[in-house]
Amino acid sequence: MKWTIGIAALLASQFAAADYYSSVDDDTCWDARNSSGGPCMVVHNTKWSQYSKDNFIITYRNTCSHRIYARFCNERKNGSEDCGASGIGAGNTKSWSTHNANGRYSYNSIGVVKGSKDWVCSGKVSNWHD
Image (cartoon, rainbow, N blue to C red):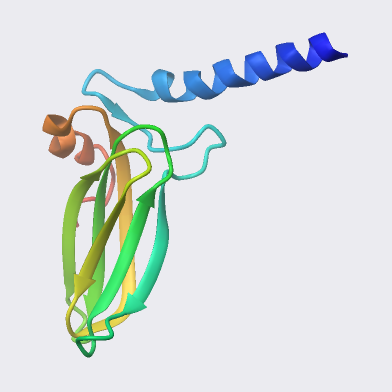
């Protein structure tokens, strides 16, 4: 029984590592998914600024062990979007704030090993540049 659990744990760890490595393409892009298939980029916190009225702040976290490139947008009261993009290292966070916001937001991410390939990899994601 102990041997079987050890083999299962070893195989599980190999498959978890294989998920990332098998998804990296020639441009160093990868799917930004964890070993369970969930997204690496998650909303860590949302809040309204206590210092500036109508200033909405959202913080994203990269929950994976490898770098991702993220695009994020906060919607303004007039319906326009305030968007930005940034690389987020493994386990790190990135905050984005917008004045005259209405509290709605959207985001997307892709894994990118080399920061110099951010725009190449983001071009492979549908609706990234809309």
